[in-house]
Length: 170
Image 1: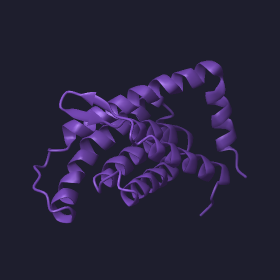
Image 2: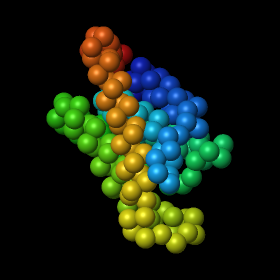
Image 3: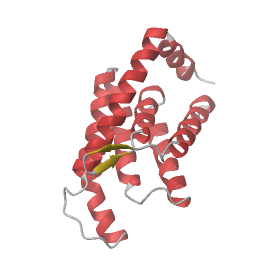
């Protein structure tokens, strides 16, 4: 396996940002949205690809669970969203596909995958689609923030610079 040190460093920084900002929440109705993980998923998916994106999401979920600020439900949601975001961007080269991948991967697929995690590993009763709506709200907020950030990076020219730097082999 060829490891790109630059991508590894950026994925570590994104994981650190996601863990440090995991206390930031946006209240929407009766639930709270934690959008920073989804913002980091989109950034990782676009700039780093699906492999580094999944690794970043896994590390973030692991650290958050170890320090008591996350739950086991973070694993399927964040990892599926990061993978689908990066994979769709890699296949299409379109940022809209990456945004869709994060929202669909985390909100729908990740929300559905949380049901067996909640029942089998956490001992909670849960309906199949119980986590879909809260995950959709959270990922939608984070993805909107990512759209704004990526747009600002494009306007400033930093998007092309970062893409070039991270795509270069060591």
